[in-house]
Length: 319
Image (cartoon, rainbow, N blue to C red; front, side, top):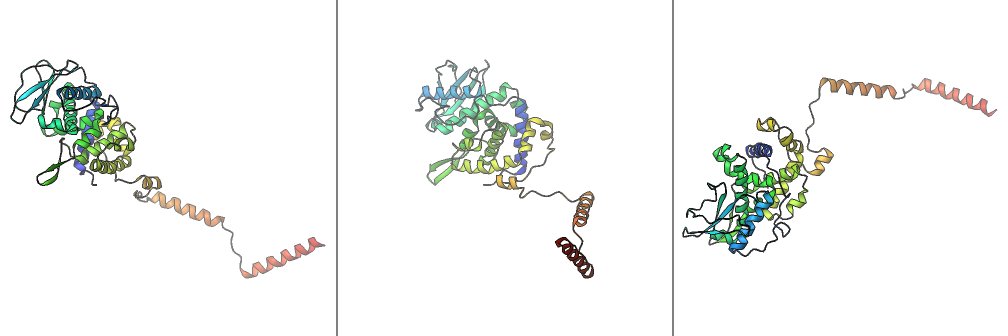
């Protein structure tokens, strides 16, 4: 699997550094699609849809925000869904499907299509992106972003809030259609970029790769495996996201090549620095010292004379 192009990698790093400065940190760690994080049964009913939304809010630490859910039918009709927590209201809704919007009272309205209720992965991804938008809105970041960066930044925020496994899976979905199996995405960032962002998250929070990979689907996992190698090869760069965000913002860094763990341990694939005059001088000094330490060989005449002297000494000692 290929990594994202360098301009996209730099965008991910630059935006990650900025979001970290605005507090984009996980509340519940790396959220997984398991019963540990989502213990509520789901059957597509209004009650379970509302429970799922509340659960996502809790994992992001935004459970106190009032949220109203709207389910929009293909005919454009919208119906509200009430949360058991009382966070959802019953105000009139437009029939246009607008994913998430700020309400005049400071709460939010989140809309999903009726078809999305049949796919828990798609629905969860939609809720995660909605909650990530809420975070950006509450932090006064969303409107400050360049318009082309806003929707991708929502996905990246989701990763930093701990939803990286969910969003990466949601970015590459197989669906059967009239023309056969097709690939759909519930995110704006493609799977390779989200996998790289997830690998960076794992390095930032010391999450083992196997923990993140355990619940990734086949294609997202293949991208993540490649991204994990890249992140390990560029660990110093990842640390700069917190330690030197100004340098990241200014693109004042170099991106290293991906090298496997064994290659990094053995130093394989790492370019050696150019030799300087001082290096050559030190090497010459070592060579001269080694030559001086070697025993000097004698010519044949001197060797014969030395042998005779040793024989006389041995003979005298025997007496």
